[in-house]
Figure 1 (cartoon, rainbow, N blue to C red):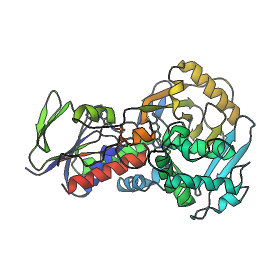
Figure 2 (cartoon, rainbow, N blue to C red):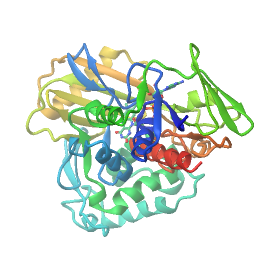
Figure 3 (cartoon, rainbow, N blue to C red):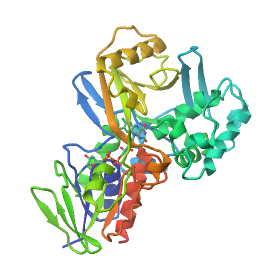
Length: 414
Ligand SMILES: Cc1cc2nc3c(=O)[nH]c(=O)nc-3n(C[C@H](O)[C@H](O)[C@H](O)COP(=O)(O)OP(=O)(O)OC[C@H]3O[C@@H](n4cnc5c(N)ncnc54)[C@H](O)[C@@H]3O)c2cc1C
């Protein structure tokens, strides 16, 4: 029998591993517990708004090299769209001040010396402190490394790190924050262009991958939840799916690309992150007015980011655990009041949906970061993938895709 590689989980980590392995000519089967691929990064038809929406707005940056390589590999790079330059529009709801952060392309941050490009109310020297995050020890929180108050913090670092780490930044891992700064702001504007899947996450990052895998004869089996793994000595011998099971030959291999709380039930003695943070998204069926930018950062509000899509306005709130128990309609009202005020729209609530992902990401604290396992396991035919594995990045698309590519590399050489 030819060697078969079983990938468990069709989120972006599993899909990127499958794309990588099939490109190298390996035979692959993907086993997905649910009826759809994409995991935490998916589109679905929503009856409340009467259109296909994403579970949550997902932002990529032009410096996300693994994610962009994956988009190229599946032929979807043109579906990630954004401005030609690294620009971020902001609105302060407390004093109605508007500004646009404009990075210059190169590594030398000239923009911090230009009051028209940097954050209003800040000085060039304020930005030097950000450099401390680049060399932060792994056991430090952001709040132990930089001052978490002041205009630069409130208007730039807090929104940036809150979105990237999905945790109150002061408690977040300084090393993970440093990794984000290193790969974005410190890499220059060419790495900071915001990119959005305008036609939806499914049409951009998921369906083209499934099409490609189909062309390469890789089967994706939906509704096929892995219940248990059998081990002998240093390798996996059987995959138990409850109603059926698969015996592995000596050459076969497995990439486990499931969330951490599932991996912890399948592998003995594995340590994984075990605390999570929520992300709340509100979707409103409404044509965005021309003056609303494709993406707007909002400070001093419940709303954190407003995204303008064709026929829809969507809002993202990170580390949204405090909003999990708020009644849905009250939350929709609060968020729409802010959006309508900012965008100059009528106060009447349009058709809406609130999506609360409770375990959107692992909690990016130094303690949880220290619990992330490496992709290579002590079993010679088993590798781990997922945004929660030890990628050195917070739980993001880039982390998930890098992890999938890394697991593919390990299995290819096992
Ligand atoms: C609302 C929201 C907003 C986000 N915003 C951003 C953003 O703006 N930018 C960004 O970069 N990242 C963002 N993220 C994070 C990003 O979505 C994740 O990092 C990424 O999708 C994780 O992919 P993954 O493959 O590691 O895990 P998952 O997507 O969780 O995939 C795991 C897969 O395994 C399957 N599975 C589970 N158990 C089993 C089993 N026993 N057998 C078989 N299959 C199983 C699951 O059904 C799932 O399909 C956001 C996440 C959320 C929830």
